[in-house]
Structure formats: structure tokens, C-alpha cells
Image (cartoon, rainbow, N blue to C red; front, side, top):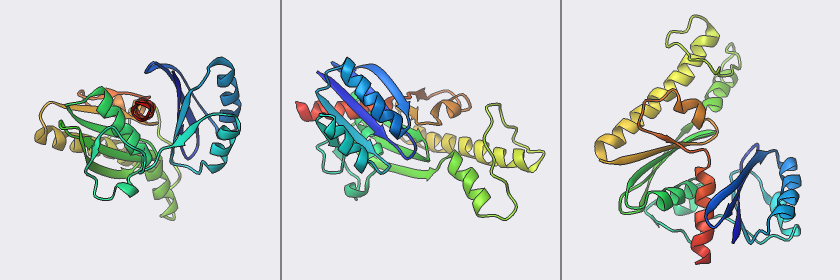
Length: 243
């Protein structure tokens, strides 16, 4: 069986093609390019099932996929899940977070797992060793922090984050903003990690998301960077519902 996992975000679409639970291909691009790529994938693979995780407006894209002849399910709070959910308002739990916890369940069943997803927002999601999702936290991501300082003040510019290391002591406005955002977020993530490590022994920590690789080289040891973690979770939910 060949499954197509689709991560539909606010600015781009990411595909993962799975065969017998093995990730065979990944692709990421704009919504318009994703439509063209889908046609190419259908020429190469006989796709049995597709599942879409949407944090952006995906209505038109779902219509396109259906017209292309694919059987597609849109992940929601009503989708049967392979883990117990102790979130007080499961109907408000983001589908991206659901998919990440599903991946934690598949790859680390019986372990305490903290999944940190560094994207538009930074989310922290915790699955305990009894395979129960307990909840987590949501914070602004890197770009959101830079944009907020620019839009909510009269004099601060819109600053991008550099690939080089950022000193803690900024010597001008731009480097001071970069220090506050990047070093501040790193300190935040390390503080959250430390709390979980103190309270849950033998904890596995996963770092994923669009800014995951950027942050992983700046964080202390003890995390696993996994760029396709959400896609793995979507595929597991497909398999769980098939079985």
C-alpha cells in the first residue's frame, strides 16, 4: 500500500510518500506547485490513501485532490487516533500537534516524549510513558517575534535572523533584536526541556518544524532533530484507521 501524507501549512505544502511504512519521497513547495507535483506523483505511484493535515485554508486544495481521483481524509479532532488523549478541549487541539503526537506514539511507544515543533509558533507536546497525551504549550516562533517587534513599535525595523551565531550582547539595534529573539528562544526551549527532564526520567526529546534545524545546532545535546516527524505521524494515523 502506498500512502500520501500532506502537511498543508500557511505558506507551503509538504508531501510524504510512504510504502509499507517506509518514507520513499518528500517534497515541499507552494500550493500552486503542489498541484503540479501531485499529478507527477500519480504518474509514478498508485496512491491508495491520502491524509491532509491543514493549518492553512485548504478547502480549494482538497477539492483539487478529490478531482484528481484520490481518496483523501482531512485530519480532525473526530479522526480515530492511536493514542489516548487527556487534553481538556480535544476539539481545539491543532491537527499538526495531533500528527506529531501520533509520530511519538509510533516511534517511542512506552516512553516519555516531548515534541518541540519550531514553526510559525513553537509548540511543546508531551506524551507520557503510558502513551497518553497530556498537553503542552504554545509560544511565538522566530519570525513571529521579529514581526511583532516591528509592527508593535514605531522605531524597530523588521529584522531577519542570520545563519551565523548571534552574540548575547548586541552592539546595534539589529544585533540586539537578533540576540533577544534567537538567544531568548533558545533559553526558553532549554528551560522547558530542563523542566521536563527534571520531572520525567528517561525522556526523549524531538525537535522538528521549519526552524528545527536552525535551532538544533544552537541547542545543547539531548535532542533528536527530525524534519519529517509530522509526516510520519500522518502516515501512522492512515495505517491505524486502515487496520
